[in-house]
Length: 540
Image (cartoon, rainbow, N blue to C red):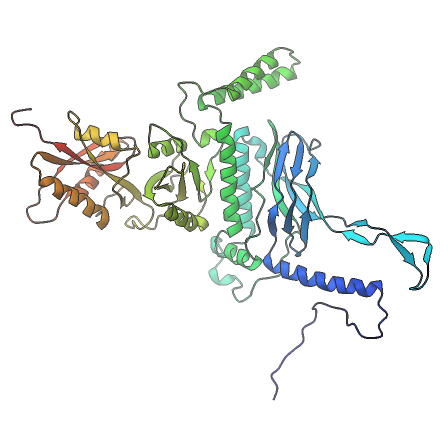
């Protein structure tokens, strides 16, 4: 008895060469088509995307595309070895349309001259020739996309807003099973990966015309070839963020941030610049020959000049960034305000809840990767954001990730991360003054304590033992005293800071000697163990 089987239709056809076959051009084409089919089918299994190159630059109204290699949805290699230029001056005025820059197979270009023969032993037929070679390259094209609300955004907000809309449309368009209202058993779990039906283009970026002229963003649409189609499909269905999308969202944010940090306008002058530009536009409409020039000159001076002495620090929102990827990196420049306050200045008055962790750089990379499937960070929303400060050298950056909340009693992730410091109060310096002096500085904390958001709990063993060891060591010197100071960022949190400091400073051994507990206002929340000399006998 033989096992049942069935031969499936389809497959790849090749030339069945045999002795006696008169080899013609048709047969050579069949051999070439067979090799090409094998190559494209194998490449299709690896997925579409950019392999290398194809970077975009925009100068005035000219788009330049560098050489590169990409694979389309059919497995065809799209290769170019020269810089391409595209004139965009014809694009329509500012409105609700942006254009997606796409890479598609180009028209085959014939080349080479070969004589044409009537038969193998004849002379060339009347001196005729044919083009014997075909070069298959790539073409860059623009496809318009209408997006309502684009022209309603401020000029500085358009790029970040467009990125947010594109990424969200990409997520919902991928059909996430676990992020929909459908019943779990309504989905076809029994089926495998279906044949792709995507449009056969490789996106390279987007361009749009704002009131300030043409704008370009490469990473909004560009996706690197880093995953197979099946992996991307199932990650999307299970509510995960595919690797290529996570990479693109981080790079999009970093590229925009790098641009606005280099050309940022002081927050105090942005409103004036907008007014001047609006008045200049009105003057042009009225055919005023002098006012627009003066107004534009003032705007250019404000945009290119130094920040006013009384201008506050620029925030992410000031620079047109209202939404962040689930993880990313922030520049850290030398500042007298310290690491934590510098980061808080970047976030400004946003509603996010910041927590800080000091760790080694490899620990940072691990936590950035963990955040891959978390939602994006909307700065107007009160979401937890963890900031990771790498130790072991001045690297000039910190990382951030969206925090997670599981329950009000769970402190394994998310929650309030409170740094704990140890310092000594000098002569004439009170414990409270010493505490606020060290908070926000570059002094390394002895550890961090995690608490539920807006609540207190028993601190972790590691930081608790460190504090208790400091207290025990200090108790041996009768000329020194201990004060545990809870630092709160607002008056309503002073009782909470005192409760957290009390738990950290309390010894649960027989006949414990309780340190003094203080609570003060400071730039960031922290707990500081302050060692100070006791007042000499007879002094107040």
